[in-house]
Length: 270
Image (cartoon, rainbow, N blue to C red; front, top):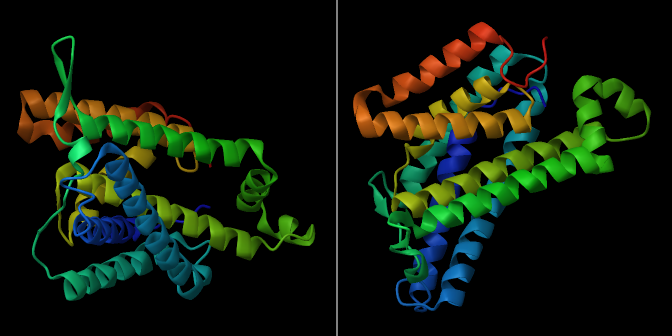
């Protein structure tokens, strides 16, 4: 959508807290820490649905109240979404306290698998499956549906799409909501994986999201997928060998790619 949105970190954190609240409620029913495999799967799904819902609602509010006024102005987008992110983070502190919270993990997803002497955390497998499903779903919508064509055309020339009879403003609102909802789902997954959440967790992860998008190229979902794989693998390998250089290695990769391809791996020259 050509929108530089720095409030995704806040959506990420709100999704984590929404999932945290759902898991706590379900644990009271005996579904989480002592539940069966089916109850564990359903608990995670309900947590993700709660995150999806809260992210969508926040995205709707932010897009209607703020973003619609600054389409086409990147500087204002950066400043206004950064401010919104700070406000949303403070609201989390009011509702849940500024202290770290421990996230319950369903019994079925604790522990690890031993595959040919390789130890694999069970929830990492869940994260990979969910990530691939989200990527496949987004690509299917964007490349195989009429809605995806309208969205891509609207980014290129919204006036032409509007004259063809499509309400591009309403469509863009829906796209912004979807992006916010997916950020919230990511936050919920991250919270369960780390087993701990904080109001500042969105800002802590936003730097990785920015590096991923820059490496992949603005506007390219596949580029972001490739960038995420590169950033994740590089960070973990370097963190294992030289922990203090892990983030620096990601930034170095970004710099090298931008020197070779200024618009990112799959971005288009502006």
